[in-house]
Image (tube, rainbow, N blue to C red):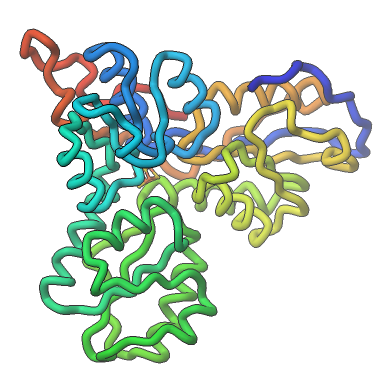
Length: 341
Ligand code: SF4
């Protein structure tokens, strides 16, 4: 919920005050697609449309969609029989798909295609009887969905320390996969420690940590070196937003905080701060970043410099259930369509 604007006082510091604004930041192609999917489902089928779990991990996005008629539930058994349900960008296991079908639900699958890619890898390696070490956070929806593709073959590895103790049946036939939103550096450390113990460990066919997660981490690394303070806009349950705070601290920011809204910035964070780095997680609408910039402007940080480390132009098609309008014509918003910073 947005708070009052202009609360921060102009704070005197010896040098010149400025903002380094990381780019890319904010919405990725998978989040854009998932949010549009819920909006389109509401337009097409009318409210309410049910959504299993948060469509993306951002409280502002969820609240906005609720105000338009989306109802978020934890499990499909909370959805009335026959109703429309959207599966979130984080993906679902085959068990969830089956439970929805058993209830006669009209499912719309907004799983990010880059998460689906990891699901397919899990299925393929399980078919070849590999043991899959899935690097990711136990209990995260994406990890549950991927593990659910091959529950008898997957073991979740939570951290580099877990790599030292995980047990496998056959060290000659083991592969690692990962959650899409992890810290690249920490994941590579986990892989290094796994490989020390299992020299035959196979790599995934391509990067599982997605382009958006990687690009946002590269940008904040460049910003963090010169920042006294980094502010990451994103929700507490957003894995990639939380990783951005960690990466900023690792790469030289003197302090780093995550906020959902501009009004959460505390005056004391700005004490002695000349340069503030700003970024946002992949599920964060740009308006929330602009509100942070406004708030910082009120405290004297009016000079904003973009630090761009990559261009992004990826767009995904809408879920197939939404690609055609009621008259059977291809929908004009079938391909994403929002401007990304
Ligand atoms: S963060 Fe990556 S995997 Fe997740 S929705 Fe965005 S593009 Fe897809």
